[in-house]
Length: 236
Image (cartoon, rainbow, N blue to C red):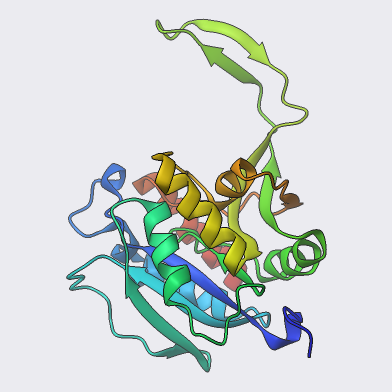
């Protein structure tokens, strides 16, 4: 079987070491209750439903007292490792901790712990198109008018939106290339906000694969309420 045959399965790294300070809860954001279960549990379940995903590597904070010691979901293995203060460092830790069977040339996915509403068919399309293109990410075209602000929060300019996209997750890259890209950025002290940014900095041009706008990232309590609505709607 050729490397990265999607039927062989890919591993997905899920960085979950942050506290989500902007959310304002006592618990780390990934453990707040969403429709009776921790937010992270919904995300992992959704990922496990994707036939292209063979296993999950969850990156936790050191001394995480809330992780429920999940060993498998839907018959797929769940492994854990310790992350870093920044997301990019946690992703790098997850990549390094993947099983040896995941070769440097194999593709891996990275998905935000706080995106429980990602669609399984979007992930499948990302895998199919992203592997063929050498790497890619789910994204959504910007539909609102964009304003650039000055230091006084007055409009300095209206920006064209035709070529602008919002980066979502999962993002898909070869294990070795993404590891090298993140190590390169860390060595230069560059703050990396997503995996595609790291790949762009070493010359890659990841493919944008359109995903659903419902693939929201839970950042505020209002987002949590919206995620609950979206999950209930999907269940119906």
